[in-house]
Image (tube, rainbow, N blue to C red):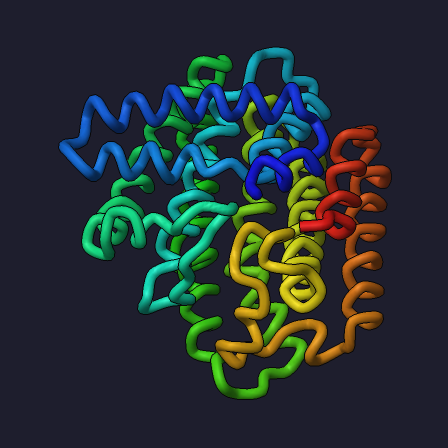
Length: 300
């Protein structure tokens, strides 16, 4: 199922390069961490997927004039995303058995190992981001800023905080404003950080960074709306994970608040606004705009 899902993703050569960089990162984990932990990290990093966050790193880097190979930097961002999925699937969170067409990590290695693996992947990704940024020619201050952006997006101000709000909202109605706050943290922050990391590595100036941040924020929220829609409209086989989990967990979603047509309209409007931000700042990137459209029109 995962392979069929992956064929829907654009940018196949770039995605293959990110996967190769993730294999190298998995090798580092196996060498530096004992027993099941290293093997389980490799399992998490090899999970496939669309690599949207990594592709955003690459395309933002190129759009801002970067001329090096940013695959390793993209892999560091994907490692943070992979850690979030390991913890998201745990019994104390969404309690899921499948991810990308495979058993979730805790079903293979057990809950204690999965918990440790998620934690271990954070410093692994931070170190990888630092090394990749320096290899691309970033000075120490810029490399440190890249790591800071990535860690802030994955911590209490971003993913972790959004996930906590999401858990606390289960079983109760939330307003659209509250829902957008949850999902800007849970999903949007890392997507926005991916774009910013690429721009920083390419030496983007303040106005370009502002536009990239606005673009990433809008696309991140649109991506989550698309996820909510797919949870209702797609099958487990199409998604590579259990469909209908939002309803089973009594979560408020965009379709439940706006209806399917309203949710689709909101996602499309966000993508249009995101692409306008790029053009207004004279960032001409067919790749970024195409990936933004893919984020909301994807079949899985």
